[in-house]
Length: 108
Image (cartoon, rainbow, N blue to C red; front, side, top):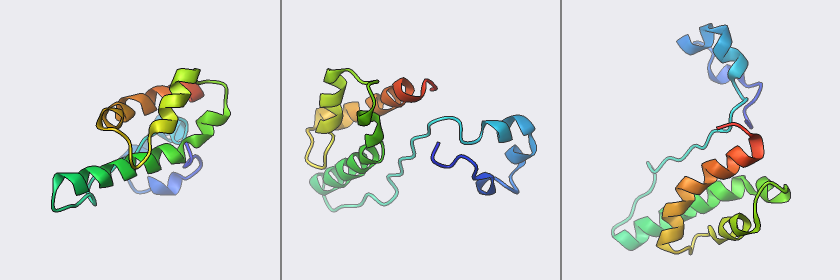
């Protein structure tokens, strides 16, 4: 949603020719994760870099914590998503963030 009004991102693409899609642009929350730059010589290094990427993604969504949309348990989990998080939290973080965004925006 932070790219609302940025039709220039899609100009020249066939999807932009359809008015329905132009009207939808910037109205749905989108999570972008790319592991393309996650490199490392061993599992620990790759894992650490992946956790940092996930933590940065959650940091971009900290505005959710300022709302009353999340239950206390969700807030606690959200705050556990850091570069040094447990593996179980890292795995769950990928599933939880879309749920938090849905609660905040009311759109999947």
